[in-house]
Length: 148
Image: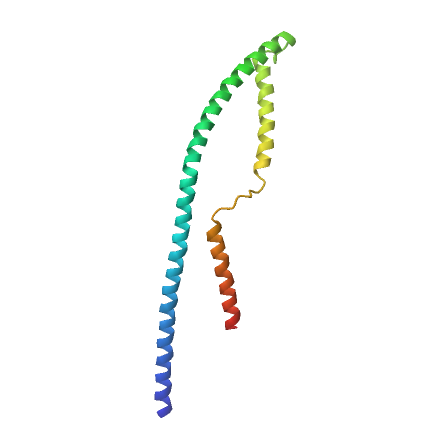
């Protein structure tokens, strides 16, 4: 009977210690996730400030360049069509043949750039977050080795 009461009090102490460990782990995990999300937010805001002006300028430049390019393409088709009328006869003489030739050229250029774009990018984003994540992984692996 004496041994049962000591065993039950020991189990109560273990249960209390486990509960404290779980609470401590929960608080630590919450603090860790909060710090990581704050770091991510800071980096995202910095990236937004840096790229906001650049993106706006790029959009305006892209639209303006695209409009100018389309206008020049229409003129090139018309001039090339006049040249085709003078040099060739048949259904492809005129603007139809020149549009077909320039369209084929554009498709070829598009395929080349599409293949080029599929190659990997060397730009690395969120470097600080990844560095902290790597440090955390190293720390966890060192602690797990110590506990083993």
